[in-house]
Length: 327
Image (cartoon, rainbow, N blue to C red; front, side, top):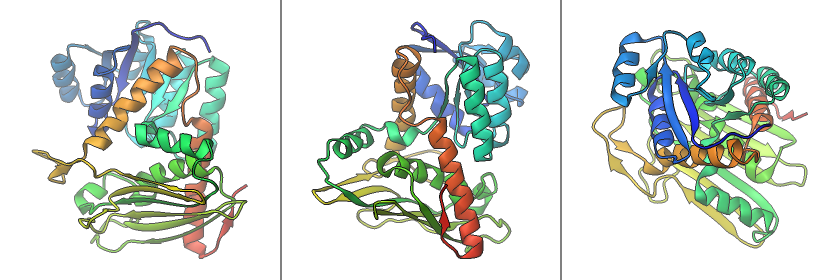
């Protein structure tokens, strides 16, 4: 891949809630410039591009035709990630794509092949891994300072109101996607998956709001993943966002609730600065290390394909009450 020069020119495709986090991250990255945006909502497009003083594109094709755009940052609805990424790669653009990058692991493989053929980078936004504490934990694992990692615990716990849940695809696909790629990052690829799912507190939404996934590894290590949208965890050492590794020589505990602030709007009264800053850390790494220096991302399309494969197996496991092999 041919590297770029600073500043890297980025355009947003999609202006939903997560796009605001991407915009903030780009703005705070000294080697990146947000040059334009597009969304189907013309009113929002006019409002935000005027406020941000960037170019508004009439449609996605116009964004792709702009030679000034070097990177397309896809923050549109999940359903179009695959299509938009393939179009951007065909147009010679580098791609950053929100998670999940596609609906299936096979579609991610298509994106992987398209990126290789185009000689362009296509990076899934696996933003949680770029937190300094996560990188430190990975280094401790690689330096054998934890010894043999025997067990991992990964959780996302928050009460998700039904009116918001209807915009997503259940706790497994929406929230536990982060947990799975984190488990891959630290422990590698499992050989077996067992999962259980429930829908407990929604009147109409049929998606899962409580899911557990158990991963078994070839060396005998295990991991437990919990996704819970039925309740908040307000207790000490909250499982709101917990990443824990236990090894024969030591352990690591990373919490997403170390800092809390009130927010004026949204479905919850609290916001988590650590979560917001994951986008900052990820964007800075992708721009500086990957696009400018040619280094690989901490977690790429290969890991994204495996993440979606594990999600597919977890759904089948929950339906059949059986542990399934990971090929």
